[in-house]
Length: 401
Image (cartoon, rainbow, N blue to C red; front, top):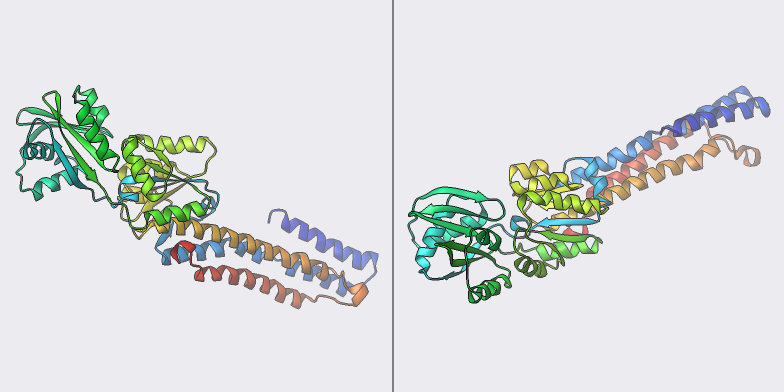
């Protein structure tokens, strides 16, 4: 529009001068030509091309349960190259359950009692699963003291005067907890099944391992397949060890995994992908995902997630359906294509009719374009743009069909 208006004014004045001064046409004819050019070139359609498509697109997204917070998210979504999924609560249901329990040099009831007594102080989903398991077994918990948490690694506290250390390998190694090769093989076997293994140690030795499984969401594999068809590189990010992460990723068809990533490092991993020239979307639902959602080019938050994650996201999925991730990106691309079509038709009207309004057909065919017809054509160009935008209300993303 910055260049459009001066160019149109120049064409209109030039047409007036040519007809009135050079070709000695009547003043009324030359002036009518000038007016017709200005009327037909009124940039209403150009002004409507983008906002109408964006407004209808955002409204259509809301009908589908996809809340798009701004038009910028639509524009960037079209250019995405990589989409990163958090695992727990995003790809999985976020309701993990203890499936296996192995006790070493202690009895299972004691192992579950001390572990749940410590984990009752934690808000982590895995901790909640252990506490639920103890409640289901009717085990009364003991009081714990000096509870401390180590982000992405584990927790520790004193129970009955004994320091209980719970977490991953690295954390227990830091606390100088040791175990045998035989126990290591049992732990590996559980991890290869895609289960998260929580290690429990006290008195300087590994006393138990609890395997926790979090079922994948029903549409996870379909969503990943739909995103691959959109030519996006799909990545899973998790704090789990590499073996567990790979096992889960294979179930949904993800080949690229970022494992053993601490919660505070998720945003850094997104930034690293961006530094490689990738346009990144991040899909998450938890408090720890908020920095990554904000760092990503487009943050996609699940409506079932925490308030801070929803606030950090550019797009919020109101339904707990991962197919809506693909649907949101497909809708965004459709809206951007419709904006380009609108702009094309807005310029097409001008490109065809401005020469006619300037009198290009008059010498050969005696055809002129009166100002009132120019006004009608200008109105029709705006109607065309609005109609094309309104057609988005009937759009159903392929992922939702």
